[in-house]
Image 1 (cartoon, one colour):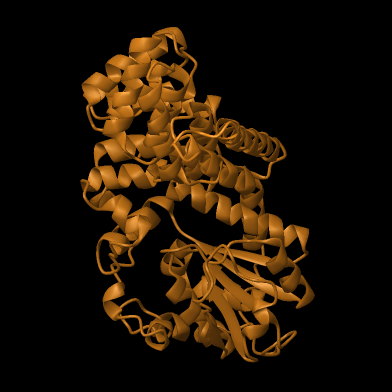
Image 2: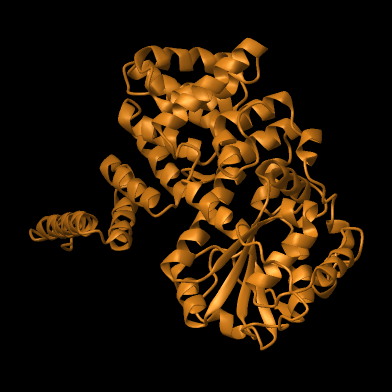
Length: 487
C-alpha cells in the first residue's frame, strides 16, 4: 500500500501469483491422487482426494473417486456419504445413483435403497436388471405382491437370471400349494444355473459316503479277551464336531474310552486355529472343538501323527438345535446369529438358516446345511491330503446305535474295548446324566435341550419343508438321511 492507501504496482501481481501457486499445487495433488489410485495405493489416493475436497468440496469427480475407494476398502457407510454428496450436486447420473442404491442395499438400508433404485428407473428404464433390484429390495421389505410384479418384469426380459428365479421362488413358497410347487421348481432352476447362489456351493459328498461305507465294513469292533487293551498306545488324536451336533457327548465318550482329558481352546475362532496350537494341549489331553480344516492344522496333525474323529448331524435337526440355541439360552443381542433370528417369525428364522441371510456390508451367512456339508468335505479332503486318518461319525449313530459306535471309535483310536465296557460308557453318558465336559467347561445343564433324533418335525412349517427340499434336498440324500423328497 502507498501512503495514500492505494495499491502498489506489484501487489496485484503478487496476489495472482499466490492464486496461481495454489492452483498449481492442487493440480499436482490431483495428478498424484490419480496416479496413486491407478497404482493401487488406495490409502494414499484417498488421503489426496480428501485433501482436495477440503479445498474443492463440490468437486464431483473427486467425490466419486474417493467414494469408490471407500467401497473397495469396505468402508461402505463413508463411501455412501461421498456418493450422496456427488448426487446432490449432479442428480442426473444414473450410474452413480445405481451404485449408491447397491451400497445401501448391502448396508440393509432397504427403504433408502428403494428410493434410489426408483430414481434410476425414472431416468433409465432400460438399465440392466433394474426391475430385479427393485423387486429384490421390495422382497426384503416383505412387500411381496409388489416385489413379484417387478420380478416378473425382469423375468420377461431375462428368464434365465438365477437371482430373479430365486426371489420369485421364495415369494411363491408363501402362497397356495400350487404356487409353492412352482416356487420349488424356480429355486432349483436358480441353483442349477448358479450353484453358489446361497453363498456357498454344495460339494460332492459321494466320496464321503464311500469313506463311510469302508468304515462300516470293519466287522472286528469289540476287543476279545485275548486281545491287548491298547494296540499302538498312546495314539495322538483330536475330536472335531460341527456346532450343535453333540460335541459334549463326543467329548464325554472319548474321555471314557481313553482316560484322557480334553483341551478346548475357546480363545481361537473356529476358522482360525493357529499353527502350533496343538502344542498347547498338555500330555494326556485331546483337542476338541468346532475347528475348520486348514493347511497349517493339517500339517501339524500329520507331523504329530494324529488321528481325527469328525462328527456331524442330520441337517434339519442341527438347524433346529442351532435356532433354539441362539434364540434361547445363548441369545446375545451382539451375536450375528441371534440378530438374524430374532425379530422375525420362527418360519422366517428357519428360512434364513436354510438359504442363508444377508448381513450388513454385502456379505451372506451361508445356510447351515450348505456350511456343514462344506465343513465335512474339507476335513475329508484335508485328511487325504496330509495322510491323517479320519473317522466320521454321526450324532444319530451316537444315539441310536451307541454301543457299537463307541466300539468303533475305540477301535479307531487304538484303544479297543469289550462290548461290556462299551455298554458301561453308553450308560454313563446317557443324555439325562450330567456331562463331564459341560461340568468342566462351566456350561449350565440347561444348555442341553432334547437330544432326540427327528425333532425338526416339531418345528418346520410346510413352507420350511418345501424350501429345504428345494435347496438342501440333495445334501440330505447324499448324507444318507433321505432317499428322495417324500418326507
